[in-house]
Image (cartoon, rainbow, N blue to C red; front, side, top):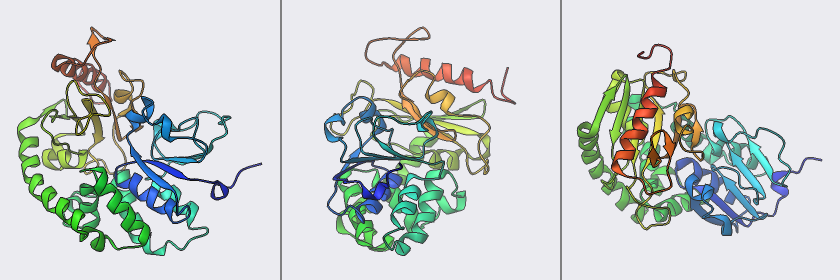
Length: 331
């Protein structure tokens, strides 16, 4: 007999710290109002760093399913259950543009979420690659909300609390702590554009941005908006060489892959999860937006040592070879 997810006793929500994960948590807290929220990263979860936070009273959202959780809400292609789950977890997986959409459709059965209806369209577009270049380059408040969330857990928590209360996007952006981050983000954006310009090269219509060790990161929208129609997809290298999960202000050097959704509105020309999962067994995401950690390599094989600068180029070379196998790629 199927279990109604809303009947579960959820006391903690472990969720991704991006716009989708934060919105998902805010929606769930309108039903499980006393639930604690913990922000995490897919790599942290897969590395076992969140194990102590997850039990049968935990909902894991916008992240890979954890076998000990009570409720799993996700939409990533690489996390689709391949068979019936028999570990007791209630699994809500759907190929929706966002995990928040799954939570929204669940909770609105019992709670009025009409105040979020318009905002949900932006969450779907931003997480699902449906935003246009003009929209992304605009001053649309929801676009800026997505940009400020990833500057720290405190900002994510403030945004989540605002969405839970029913504040408008404009009201949330006016919260003093969020407004400060917004001002910083707008100033940093000009610098980030310069860094992308200086650190990006295009190889076989794949834009490669080397942003590691500069204390800044970018999503695919910013890179592909800058490069334009010269690329079909982009690869963004970010994080810190030699870092591990759990270090304050640092995280392992990683790669994110994005289709140029401004050019390919109906999906990309290559399943980018082939790149994200080729070297890293914990990599994954969507065909058009995914990521993984850079791997230490001896030849083409993973090595048990710290990642070096040379490993970054070795990883990139292997990914470029895979990318070249697409239809229309170089021979």
